[in-house]
Image (tube, rainbow, N blue to C red):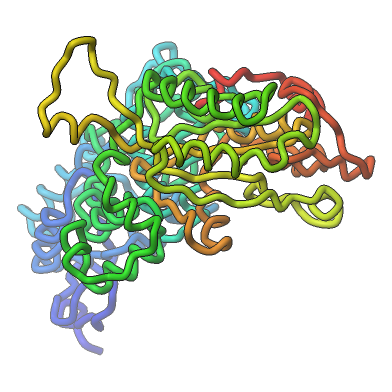
Length: 516
């Protein structure tokens, strides 16, 4: 039998490398990278192997000694629990001081109490624990966000997942961010998050990283990713979806100038989006939204007297800025709204207000969209997606230069939606949001219906949660058109949002508190 000190270990993904002599087979080390850093961990691992220690690159049940730096015992234990599900690791949890002394001595030193990791001292009376309902439609979420740093980090990871066509991961991050937005105070300790819904292991790791280090390493790495930066720019073009942007990136088109120089054939929407890129990626103020509202409402009423128009989306929830302006139009007399959209669009075009427009017809049929089919993720209303030319107001007597005259207007995204009065309450609820939009939204309005469905899947978190609640908790099917009760086998009518909440067995939440 070969003496133990001369025995060599077979090379593998984990454990010591081939050629390393294992002098202490009863000791298997694992160095925790958290707070230690990858380069320092690599150096210390190599050092310990040269001293005859066996080191595992990945944690497993064979590990006997876990070495950590600047972590408490509870923090390391939480990490270990995430690695070995349902089992309690029996390894010693040791401070880096034990490792340093062992390296100096050239053998494993005796484990003293000062070597063992200490529990984190957090007085329970100083920790404010939170409790919130599972569904966003049960929570009141105002615009006052006490955890912006955390929610911004999660939202960026959600956006990256959505840009990578990973729907499930994106929704998970969005739901987690929505929970944090609803909290009454800032999160300062991980213990405050115990028992909160929608916070998975990945989310908790990101939150912990931000709380302890001021930023998430994963988020910072994502921000620097060439693909992420290119997708942000290219999907910021009106009419460009993720698949188109991804194809351009594979062709090494990474920014607007490269796109202009590439000779790519753009459709009408994409060309308009490229022409007005800067304007469309600037926030729209509430004052600008009100100015557009006055113009559109004047046209709507002139075309159909008695018609009603509502400013919806984020502005209805109380936001002072947005990325587009949405209007919902109806008429008190059912059927009078039919044929309204073409007339409104024609009048706006004749007055020079539309730089681009695409109109879709109403394709919703209650008899087919109800009990026979599951609710769609998108509505089927008559809509007009447009780029609006908003003139800048000039003070009395103010003279503009030729350059100033040329810049005397800005382009704004404006969406018009026409709903029958019988469906108006459902449309108002659905289009109020909250919307989970990209900072530079990828718009697929000129693309196929399938692409548009995929895009809208991400758009309205509050509405998505309402539909999830309806299906899972009430055996109902909710859309922006109607509410169908599967148990009763009939539609439940509503003339207001309050009635819809009542049908669903939910407390009414006003628009200003739907900012999930």
